[in-house]
Length: 391
Image (cartoon, rainbow, N blue to C red; front, side, top):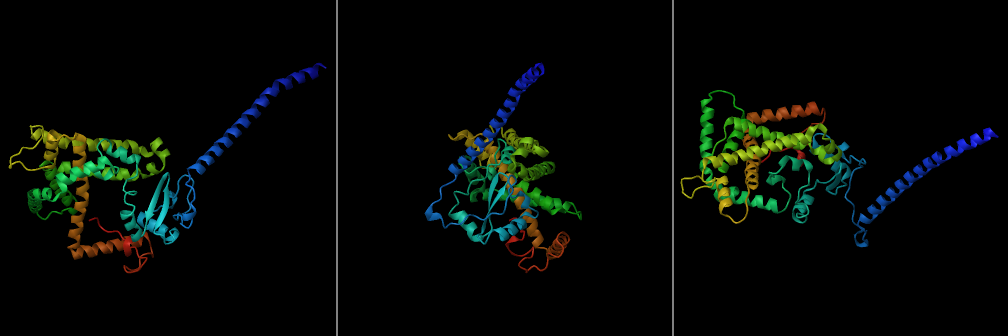
C-alpha cells in the first residue's frame, strides 16, 4: 500500500508539468493559426475588387519567382541581353514584363510603342524615382538633381540649374571660358611632344575645367580633377554594388560588405568637395561671395546664386547651392568626355576598325559560336539591343 501511495504522489507531481507542456503547445498552435488567418484577411481586404467590365484585361506577364529573392536568380551578365531574353521568353509579345527584385517591383518595357505611352499617357505616374536607401545615403544632405524625388525640391533645383547655367544666354556667356580652356589644352598637348596621350583623361580634364569655369570662374588643378573623378567613379560603383542591399533589406540591416559605411564615406567626401568650392569662391570674393555689378567681373553660377541668396526673398541655403554645382559638375563631365572620345574615335577609321575587331574577338572568347554576322537578327551587334556610346 505504501508503494502505491508513493506512485500516486509521483504521478500527481508529474501531471501538472505534462499538462503545462500540452497547454503551451496548444497556445503556440492557436497563435500561429490566428496570425495566418489575419494575414490572409489583410491580403483579401487589400486586394482590389475584380470588376466585371475589366475582366477581359490581361495581367502583366511575369516569370516564375522565388519567395524572397523574386527574379534575382534570373539576372545574368550582360544585363540588357538577359532582360531582352526574359522579355522574349515570358513577355508573350506584350512589350512589358513584371519583375520582382527582392522587395522591389520593376516594370520592364521592351517595346517602343509601350515606352512612348509611358512617357506620354502615364508620364505622371512614372515620373518619380524609386525610394532607395542607397540613394539617400549617397546624397546625404546634398541631393543631386538626377537623384531627387519628383516634387518641390526637384523642381526648385532644376529651375536654378536651368536659369543660371543651362539657358541659351548663360551658355553663350561661357564661350570665352570654353575657348580659353581649349587653347590651354592644345598648348599642353603641344608641349608634351610625342608623348602618349590618354584621350579619356584629357577630355575629362577639359570638360571639368570648362564646367568649373562656368560654375566658379576658375580652373581645377590636375590633382583636384583626379580626386573629383575618383569620387564620381567611386559613387557610381558603390551605388551599383548597393542594388542588392536595396532589393534585400536584410543585407542592409546587417551592412553586408560594409556598403552602408562606404556610401556614407563617399557622401562625406562629396559634401566636403562641394563646400570647398563654395568656400574658395567666398574667399576670393570678400563681399560675402556675391558678384559685383560691373562688367569686368565674369558671370558665374555661384556668383548668381549667392547674389540671389542675399537679395531674394525666397530662402536659398548653401545646401541648394552645393547641390546645383555638384549636379552640373558630376552630370556633365563623364557624359561630355565620353561623347568627345567617341567623336574622335569615329573620325579615325583605322582606330574604329581596330575597335570593332577587338569587340568581336572579345565576344567570341566570351560566347563561342554565338557571334555570326552584324546583320543577323540574333547577333549581339544588331538591333536595338546593341550597346551604343553615350551622347
